Image (tube, rainbow, N blue to C red; front, side, top):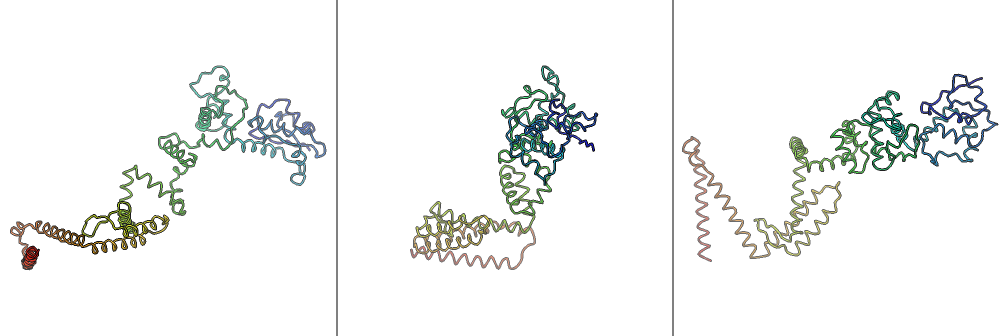
Length: 421
């Protein structure tokens, strides 16, 4: 029975006539006259085998885009001896063999395989058709032949252009249609190619630059930027992603006042977040109080005086601060900060009481501060409004009379103290 197989779409259209002999002479007799492609071949019986070089020749014929001299494309004698015993001794379908060979080429070189086809065949509009470039076609014509968009063709063209500028591949001018060269590794391809139109926009360029600064492929960052719903889902579901997003937002807010305002407004309008911010602010203030004693060697008394910290107090503050600094980011610092603050503040009060001169100065400062506040409050009373408006009530006069009596007592006490001293 005669069997004909359909060639792979990726097979070269201009194989050399001599290559048909390596496809197997026995199967060639059964090929219909209309099938003239050199890739058509039919496996012969298992017993008579072709020369050992035939598989390598077929590989060279089918994988025209593979790098010349690539060790991955060579077939050694051991693999040839085992080929007939693979899959329980069954003969491989030639279409499957062709697909495997094409896959091997692409696995080694990735998008470079197709970029080479564009680089050696495309001459974008505006370039002179001189020399070997006369046989090249425009990106639009190439796309029409390929059944895809000119934009897709140009993305491959631009990727090759950038790689050529880096010296990774030859420039377009030295490539002619059908030329084969040694291609870079597949992993390098993604550093030059992007499949997203947004990459050429101002926004896309900014994302690409940021991705390169972080040491990741721009295509990954562009994909995330184009699908914010997926980003939201990942943040909601995964603590690690949420932590990365938090860090990124904090870094961005340092240079984005508008985002700072939006975040502050959102927090202020959410009761739970507002309470959490207040609690963290309180803890930060307490830690700052302890840190100041350690770093500056000074304490601030309850009355507001700033004096040198005793050695014992400073050592205790250092001990508490070291405990606070050793906390992980995931640990709550509020309780530890409160304990450190209360301990240090208690030592400050003790230091004030044990120093007679400091104790007197502390009380004098405290009394003067209270007197200043009372004076300011009384000066803010507007007696003109009392006279103009009917706001008078009996207890107002009683309170002022009581205040007058207290002030008189205070004055007498101060005069007595002055006379005694």
